[in-house]
Image (cartoon, rainbow over all chains, first blue to last red):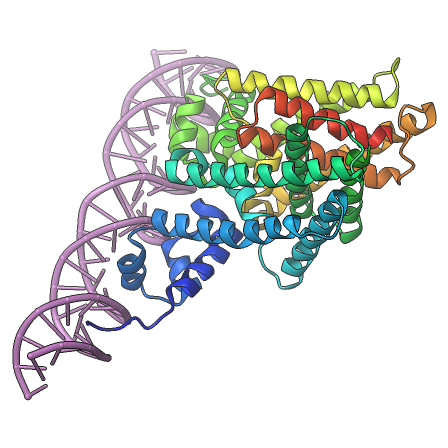
Length: 199
Length: 199
DNA sequence: CGAATTTTGGACTGGCCAATACAGAACAGG
DNA sequence: CCTGTTCTGTATTGGCCAGTCCAAAATTCG
């Protein structure tokens, strides 16, 4: 009963996600959020309680969508460990270029958030980021070990360390993208990043 | 003539740099800057005109100190190209751990700034970042080519691409540090990063 | 000592910030 | 059609923001 919502909550979260992704937590005002979502102030606060709460929802949404897609790609069977990692690289690169063409936010929302104070001051945000990192590292580690077994990854380094390395290379690529690297440079970063695994 | 300053301008810039480094442009208030520098509002505005101007000074200070030190290390003679890169990695890692122990800002001020809107909205900031990146890439490229000549770097990839890769690995390591990676993880990232150059 | 000049501290300003209050709108059930 | 309930638009709140103003302080030069 009661008056029905005139908007889709998930869609609003997705719009807020884009806004926060583009400008970060601090620089995004509640006014920006109203404009991005198309909602009035009352609807925003009635639905999401506060800017902090909406930010957490937006970050969780980003993580759910992006990390899930990436982990799924790494778990696909039918190709070697290294091939799957290369496929992930290609996907990330494509996503990066696509966002650029659409004039959307560059880089990675979670990486950007890590460099903001909110990642330390808000425990819930810290928890989301830590949990996502753990999940990604676990996924990386699994595919690396597969690669070491199937021979596509010649490096005999500790798989946990290589997972950290992989995570760093990806974060670094996104920073490079924000710094203005062109497609060729990004491709070279990814290709060289894979070299370290081959041996 | 006139009343003499009761503070050292360079010292004030250094203090402001620490504040901006720790919290970023957006989240650092002018009040924070007064407390960090120990100056009153009037002195800050009389000396530095505005928050934007002080931020540019702080960023320029960081770049001058940090990049100069790193470039100098890479230009030191008496060791192979790869050895110099490893020395740079060691220095960065040491600096990262030191900052952590002193409870200071983690990560890299320029990397953090790249993920903030100010890096796009303020043309002067954009110029500082672009110029620094160019300088770093040039320095990386030079030492990589030396390494390719002296045989320490076996990778036959394009030196400009490898320079981008190096820059990415370093940025990625700093993100990993902010994400909570321990010393061992950072060491593994750097070591694996060097593997890609060896061949 | 006095005039000119600069820095300094503290009070102050308009504006934007996140968040709230409230009245009316839009439904469901009876 | 009426009542209860939820949503929505507008006006408003107190607070912090960057930046200004001004009078007092501290110097140099004459």
